[in-house]
Length: 212
Image 1 (cartoon, rainbow, N blue to C red):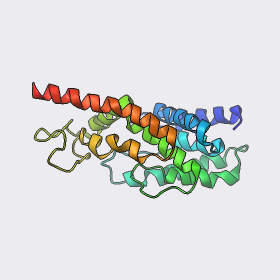
Image 2: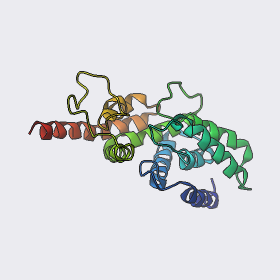
Image 3: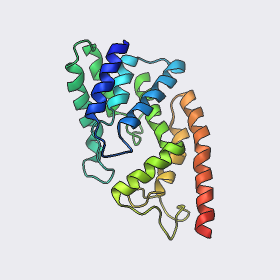
Image 4: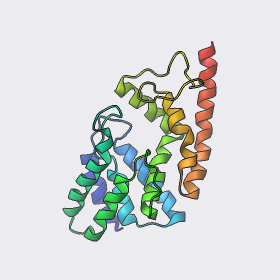
């Protein structure tokens, strides 16, 4: 992708992405883009598709407990299609593939993507669900959703099924700690494994503090 087109997309994304959700703000989009660019070096992939997909994959977002939350990827894809159609120099034949990558980006998707761009976008976004950043994002969302940090009777889900809509720490067990097993690309898996060590350290320290 030409640098002028990338800069134009960055400028549009900065204006379009709302700043009222720090877990899915413009900085989140930039981090996902950086992850994409890192993965592409070893895996290949079309940056004409991946750059706008990374920048706009969460351009429409709802709190996780909002009834429209599951529709956010489709709404994001629809908005991206409109944006890209209005950029004269963007290759129109690639818009559908940008939208497809966004629509299939959600962590909860269990199907195996049939193209490398969707795999890379998913991996790049999932890297935001592990490591120090994931802890910050988890508890930012916890405050937004007004849910407790943890279940006082069983904080570490030792005797119950995790329920991340009710307790912040539960997201570690339903999502963050399993990220390495959900990766498609070798480099993303290696990064996720390294970052996951910090999550285990966090849990260990929290157990000590709660035992005091």
